[in-house]
Length: 299
Image (cartoon, rainbow, N blue to C red; front, side, top):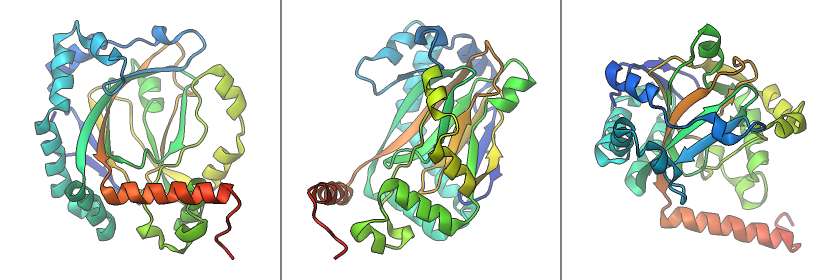
């Protein structure tokens, strides 16, 4: 996979979009042999996936009959791909508006071990991956789009990225969502808080859609944030971003063409937690248990 000459979208964090990261012939074969079908999810489901890290090894059974897919997944999980990604990170240091944010990101590569997972995704009209910031141990996310069959699919099947309308209010919102507005964490400057994960209710099925209609938490998020970029769901296009506190993004297929599958490959890079991070998580768990038992920290 080639990571060069991206379109760079600047905001609170940069988003990198690569056109034709795979050779055309290789991509078209992967597209023809995409091994996951939404039919496996059932009539009432809007989404299905298969992960390289799942214990059921479903992903590997799906790609077993495709030499192209087997070789591609093996390439992504091998060390040279990770070195390519790290080389890109080092070369793009000027794209961050905050030197502190870039150095914190870089420090994670020096203080932790990173590993890669891949997952196949298919979604149909109605699916909604509501705004979220990704898991705390996420380092980078790369989304390879396999493209729609018409303009409507390409314009409505991408990923939308958000920025705060007010950085101060957005930070307060994240603290509330993650519990970092209480106890000792309320004393920490925002930039020094441990990385955390924030998610909102998601729509995986018709039942979820009904439950999440006009959901208060989703409405509050949109009151405080605005989209700054939506990638197009065009074939052989790759979107990349590096995890930070405010890397809010979503996938909304409410306007996706009916009867069409949105097919993507998600490449995630994670950091194995250091002893310090494990200690922080243990302290947070201890504080939560003590609060549950009635111990007060604001006296």
